[in-house]
Length: 93
Image (cartoon, rainbow, N blue to C red):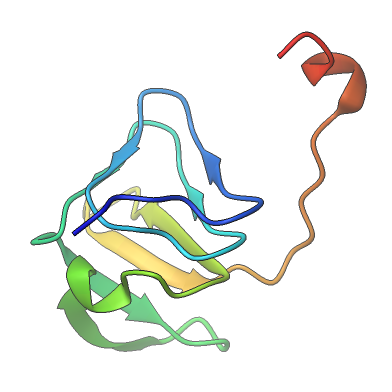
């Protein structure tokens, strides 16, 4: 499997991925998502909708991966917010 990032993906500081990401996905800072990571799926109402291995989410767009602050579980929910980079901050990249 080729690990690739879709357009508009954001990977937080000290984070990484072991699966390909679709367009507009976000990985929170400090989180590393491997293919075998167990991910808790969160629905649009904020309720737990089940679990799966991260490999099952490979290539899907508009996902936000985060870690639950109390349990430490990796959570995934739909990332529907529009994200734009600060042009002044990133003009030297």
